[in-house]
Length: 105
Ligand SMILES: [Zn+2]
Image (cartoon, rainbow, N blue to C red):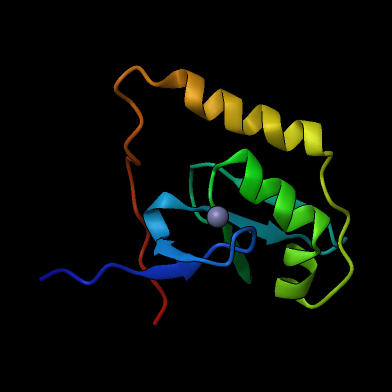
């Protein structure tokens, strides 16, 4: 049985497989970046479902800021929703994550 990393969505506060969540990181300037794919960025991460309701909840209820324990420069809500729609619109058989980095213990 393979170990599946489980993370908590900062939006709806439920747990899910890490692969089903987007990872968010904060840079040195306190700007939040949502990673929808690609190589993992270093640093502390927070996880959120790639869904409008979760992203909106994470921002409006301060879920990201609570998770990172600091004030953040959050992206525009519209920009996040564009990410969600972009991810959903691709759907041409390339929806499975292609690579999966090592998971820290
Ligand atoms: Zn969620």
